[in-house]
Image (spheres, one colour):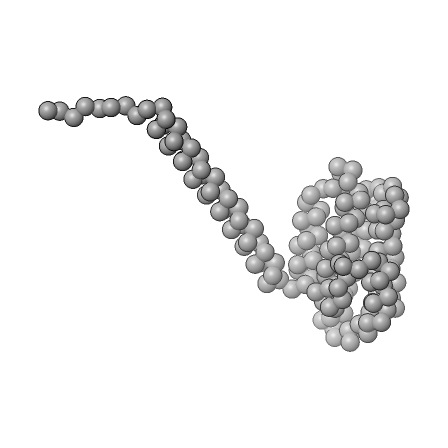
Length: 165
């Protein structure tokens, strides 16, 4: 006798489709997870300056000011600077208010009066947008970004020259 072909039932086909879609979803999740993990590993291996600059570029890539999200932009921008300070100076900057941070920085030997003045101006202007409801403009966000980059670069240069205590 010859074998007889029995077509699969709709239930069997549906199970195979669900299994295939589940496999594709698992593969996509694994690739997404590995991509994020490899970025985190790369960032972990970066110097604090490189890492801060990468975080700034990622923030600028999100284009928050163009979407009118000025407050969110300033929050993220100050977080980048505060994380950089935490990585280089050991001050728990992200977990402190601006006033607490400035008080801690004033007692830290590696902060010169010029750096403190620069940080005070930067953080207090950001606080005006974040907490006092000041309306920001694209020019203000550009200036704040330039100030953050200038601070990080100047601090790195100080470090290379051995000026910091």
